[in-house]
Image: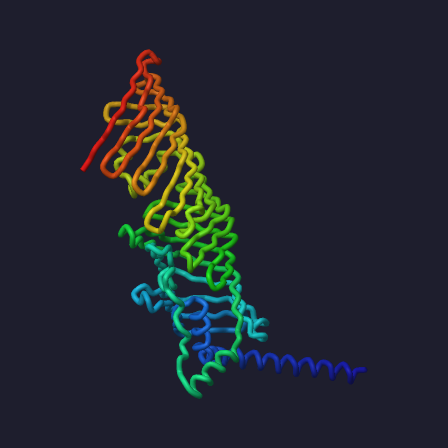
Amino acid sequence: MKLLVRFGVVLIAVLVVAVGGLAFYLNANLNALIQQYKPDLERMASESLGSTVTLGAIQAQLFPQTAMVVQEVSVVHESHPDDALTLSNVSLQLQLLPLLSKDLVIDTLALEDPNVVFILDEQGIFLAGLPRGGDKPEPEPSTKEGVEGEIADRAREAMPVRVQLHSLALKNVNATLRDEIRGETYNVKNMNLASRIQLDEEAVRLTGLDVNGTALTEIDFALEGGSMLYNMKRGSIEINDLNGTFLGNPMSVRGALDPQDSSKIMEFHEGATNLASLGPVYDAFAPGLHDLDLKGTVEAVVRMWLESNSSFNADAVVTMKGVGATVGEYTMTDLTGPVTIGIRPTVQLAKTDKLTGAIRGTPLGASFNFEARETQGNMQQLSWHVFDGTDDFNYTVQLCGD
C-alpha cells in the first residue's frame, strides 16, 4: 500500500513538472508562434472588416492571464487611403481552452486614448478606415497564379480560426464627426465606453452600454442600458432604450435613423431641463441666447428622420414651465405652455395655441403660427391678450430677406 502511495506521489510530481515545463515552454515561445501566424490574423481581420488590416508588434502571455497586446493596428480602405484608422496598444483578454479547438475567444478588447473619426457623406455615417456605402470589400490578398497561388489558398483554408468578441472597454476616447456635406466638424472628448459586443459581416451590436464624455468642449453627457446597432453597409443606426443625463438633466434615446428608409424615426426625450444649465449649448449653437437671461424649465420630445444623408426632418414639442426672458426693455415671466416646432430642409415651423405668462408683470396670453424659409418669414395668427384681457392684438407679419 505504501509503495502504491509513493508511486502516486511520484507520478503526480512528474506530471506537475511536465505540465509546468510545457507551460513555461509555451509561454516563452508564444510570441514567436504568434509572429508566425500574424499574416493569417491580418488576413482574417481584413476579410471580416472589408479593409486592409495591418498589425504591429504583438506581445502575448498565457500565464497568469491569457492576454495579447498589439502595439499598433492600422485599418485602411483602398477607396479612401487618407482616412485610415490607427489604434495603439490594443489589449485583448483571451480564453485559453478555446484556442485548442481553433476558437479565438476574446473576453474583452480594451483601448486607451484612441482617436477615431466618423464621416458623414451622401451615403451615410461611416467609421474612417472601413468601407462606406458604395465601396466594395477589398479582394483577398492572394492573387498569385499557378502552384504558388494554389498553395497559398490551401494554407488559408487550413486555418479555419473562429473569432468571438464578448465585450469592449474604451477609455478616454477622442471622437470626431466630420460632416462632409455641410463642411462642419464636431468633437467628443474624454469618452469612456463599456459594452458587450456582437459582430457580423454587416453590423456591430452593442448591449449593456455604459458611456459618458464631453461633447462640443463643455457639454457633459452619460448614457447607460439599452443597445445600439450600427449597420456598416447601410450607414444606419438603431438605438433601444438608452437612458442618462445631458448637462445633468434627464434624457432618453430610442429609435433608428436610416438614410435609405425615411420611415425610421429616432426619438429624444429630454426631462425637466433648467434653462440656466444650458450655457454650453448656447455657446456652441446660439451665443445670442445668453442676452435673453433665460430662466425656468422646459421638457422636450424630439422626433427625427432622414430623407437622405443630406437632409433631415424633425418635429418637437417643447413644454415651457415658468420660463422667464428679457427682450430689450421687456421682461417676460412665468411663460407656460407647449410650443410645436417643425424642421424641414427648406422651412422651419413654430406654433402654439395657448401660451400664458406675464410681461412687465401684466398677465399675458398668446398664440402664434410662424413659418420661416430661406428668404421669407411669415407670421400668421399672432395674437396676444394683455392688460387683464381688456385689450386684444392680432397681427399678420411678413419678413423678407435677401
